[in-house]
Amino acid sequence: MSGTKNFQSAKLLVITAISVCFLLSCSTSKKVTKQAQTKEIAVKDISGQQQLSAEQLLNKAENSTVSDAPKLLIQASQQFIEQNSYSKALWLANQALPLTTQVQQRYQIAMIKAQVLHLMNEPSLAIKELKQAKAISANNKLSHQKKYFQLLADVQTIRGLAIASIEARLHAFSFIEHGSEEQNDQSVIIWKELEVLSQWQIQQLIKRAPPRIKGWQQLLSFAHRFGFQQTTFNRYLTQWQRSFPDHPANLVVEQLKVTTLAEDSLITNIAVILPLSGKQQAAGQSAQQGVLAAYNNNLKQKLHFIDSQSLDMSTLHVKFEELEIDHVIGPLLKPKVQEYLSQNTLTLPTLLLNLPNKTQLATHQIALSMRPEDQGVQAATTLSQRSYKQPIIFSHRDNVSKRIAQTFSKQWLKITGNKPGLFYFESGAAMQKQLKDSFDVSTSENRIQDLKRRIKQTIKTETRNRRDIDMIYLVGSTKATRLLKPYIDVNTSQFAEIIPIYASSRSHSDNSDKSDSRDLTGLVFTEMPWLLPSKQQNSQLKQLNKSLWPEKSDGLQRIFAMGFDSLSLIEKQQAMQQHPYVRHYGQTGVLKLNADNILTRSLLWGSYQKDQVIEVAMD
Image (tube, rainbow, N blue to C red; front, side):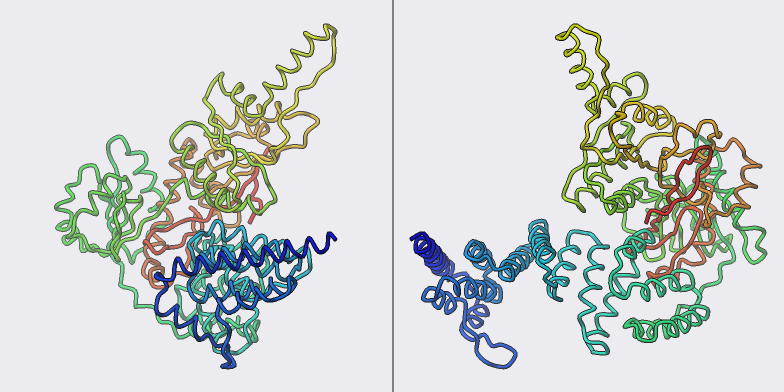
């Protein structure tokens, strides 16, 4: 009896779904384009046989058995997508879902919904359906097909998640027939996506181990390091071909071999515009020292230092003509950058040492970005891949810290769909109370006091912090970190697991003595190579710099590194603009030029270990 009842209920659902769909069809018939109407009347498959339209499939489903109806409704949903009737396709897929328990059909429905939501420009909803399809696949040992990875790549691209997008694209690429025209076309597209990734993004992609990544990885490494020297690059490309003779990137390699770089213009006289007087004189002198360290008495070039604080920008073009300037480094200060860009007569190749305010750079201008927010994106992306589910952010209330913390939070939300807790702290006595409140330690203490009042006996107690936190991202000055890190350690219950703490470069100081570092043991942070003992650090120059200016602040050290990198960057500027794969392995980071003519950095990771700081592999 119950079986008959279930059958009748299911049949009623089918009839209701079909009836409503027909009503929707009638109410929206005026909106259907001629192209869509044509598809509805005569849709043919690859073999040339005419397929049934969505409406014909619905008619067939109405007269079919309950077991056959879901398959027909799924096919009708797919046909509605072909007819650009996305709302109908989505509605019908939702109605078909409760009619089937078949794993394959439920997977198909999730894919249909994901495709429709993607076409309706709802990427956040589309990714949820793709996750549902992934769960069905994992739980039932179903294999994803090419369509799944193609759709996933497209959705992740819209969501702005480049690593996830190219990973999916590489999986889709593995389904294409080797040596086919499609493979050749797609290999070029994949290379275009790979060559614009930052160094830390590439390392994250490698960890995910998509198909044939070793060949792509090696090709990227050669392109990054040697792409601006074509003769040397070609030699390494030949070496790559010997190592990966069957890799689908061989077509890309052949194209790279015949790539020609525009002949570099001779750089003889370089103008360096810095604040060499006034309130920012120390910053200008640090940049100047960095430029001179890189210059190293190069007899082929001549440096002309110009004080931006006493400079009349409107006459600068005349000064450039008198000095026969070929290239410009600077200005350093943001107001002077804006003033420089407003001079339309200045058309020389220029490397700006600060970012302009919403001004589009000309083709002959590039800017070196030291934006603190960039490390928030790198940290959030890297740490989100380490199985942390409930991070919290502790940030000082100063503007720079807040910018990093908010960027980290937004990036974490974009990747995981979860928004981490964000707590701001003040310096001084209020810091410990704010930390206790965010850890719920204050609540635990209040419960203990209440319990003692009720029992009126001496009892042994231990405060407990909240247990849903599995990672802390700390953004604050070195001084604030040295105060806050011990507070975190003290306020973590002995019953709880140790909570890993990560930080921005603001928490690290190159000027700390060894005794100051013990309280920071275990803290992991992002940093530029110049301020972190590493393979990329110019250690010999660093030691010399330390001996000459032992009291130089961390901020001035960073400006020195920027000045040092700038001289090498002007020699690569033209190559970096022509070919996005060219990189500069500098003291400020691994630098790449983006589509807006802005140089962005990939930073290293360091860790305090007892009485020393060491480089650690995170990506």
